[in-house]
Image (cartoon, rainbow, N blue to C red):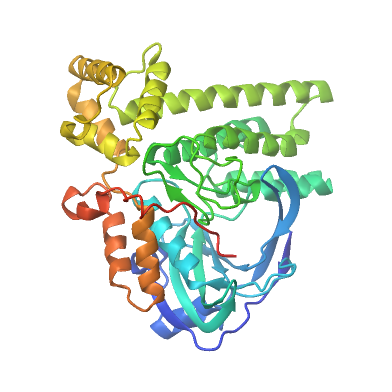
Length: 456
């Protein structure tokens, strides 16, 4: 499952950005020159055994055998409080799984992953973190020559749904059982039975996707090789946040059919979980018929859990303390109205949360008026303080608007990090109205970012 893979040294490394708070959490003390040496791959830390991981993946629904084509895992690190994390270099050179790729990454996408992962962390969404981005001093050829960079990623682990797919494809049931047990221990699952792990895995994955839905985040590439067993959001390629509410919005230029649109993310999570359950189903107890029936029940249970979690998440966003009969219909009606009137996703829920009702004055729609009236009636007949608390916890006032992210990265590539750093400070405090300022304003038609790219 892993093969040795040393980073390829680079010509003239320099630090682009460094996450000092995360370094303190990790409990690693080093000089600036040591960080640059490690983050560039020019020096492997003492005790590290650098490897590239093999895994499979259903990419846009099609099975493919894959592996770390430009990522090198330096190893596991135990933090001061006892937690264990992976430390990985992304863009560190050719690995045994690179196929025809150069194994390198460019500065823009690495700065993008750094910013977006920090924003997700601040939004209380399980995510990998970025420790640093080091410029290599070398050019990388894509459509043109671009500045090269390496990102140091910190993750609870890099075990993916696709890792299990790979082992199941090879038919190594002993290794599969060992990996399942290790995953449960590594990530603190509350059970060691296959049945219990499946149930907890389903809950974790759906909770993460519901968090994406909560803030209007579109992952963009929900292939099974990008879904981590830890429940962390993994890999920030063609991802973005919804501006105007469009259920089928996609941000990957590859996704021409909307497979990974905002609206489809829960169903794709269920599809991916089905692939994972198929992979581990051989470890269930009983005859083949019993295993098949258990598997079917797990999949039905996952669908029911998904619907319940979506309704509870949306009820929190509008501040409904109790979920009542037909609330799922009312909440879907709200999303339909927001889509009909192209209402800004983040600002609509923020306005409800902080009482900016003037934001709705221009909406001349009887159905919207009825819905808002029902919402106000519902608020007045429940614990108002608890309802407001639910909304504040669920609705950020400021998210990384795509046009601002692109501006910040463009300036940073040109050598000016001032806007990039300003944006970071805003996104690390997403509920602060005082600092949000202009970064809350939706893009003009000329500013709308249609597609983002993975940068491979």
